Length: 244
Image (tube, rainbow, N blue to C red; front, side, top):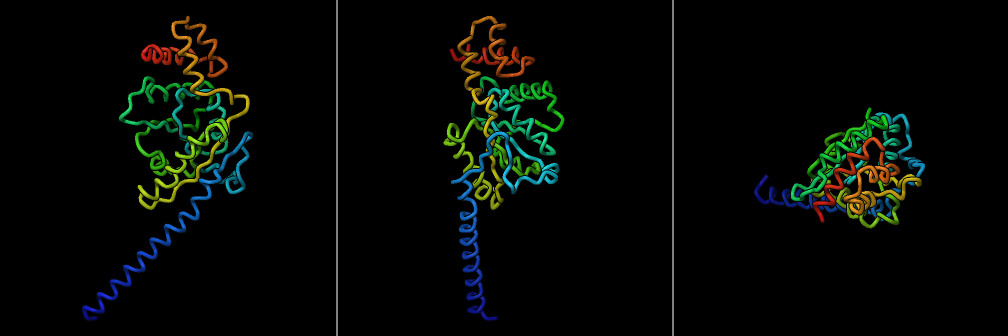
């Protein structure tokens, strides 16, 4: 083949590569934009969509539930109990920003959650970890097949969650690179715990800073397991004192 022929062949190969890349982007957008516009939100009692309803297959799966758990509470535990019964392994991931200083560190929150799981006898197939980096990447490394997020309701938390969903959807494709994202499923809270939030607990400990610890613990007993109420109140009371 002469030089002109080789040059023409190279041009054709580059053209097809560009066409393939553009086509891949179009197909990816066509497949991934709808879940962002219409996220999968599962209300209690958490009946999964048909495509995720194969119980036998689910018993072999690893899934990730990510959040700040600052602090963990009964609402989180209810979701984890459901996931632990359905899936082989549940990995709870608390993300960390290395550039941020935490009053109650992710490691301390991990220990709190582990103790809560032990108290509720949910620690058999639930692992709690801290990860600094893209959580979708960690989930892939652990062989997870579904990415869960816990919310009170989409109306209350959807705006903030959508930005995270976009990151977890497009991040693998852009930064992977070209890694297909895990499906994200949002679990709405169990109604009896929907009044509970981590912010509520932090505000409560802040407002009661300086109050006798027994009173703080009593106030927390409907929000977290009583066995860890004292430790939690001490941790977050210290946070409130530092902030004041």
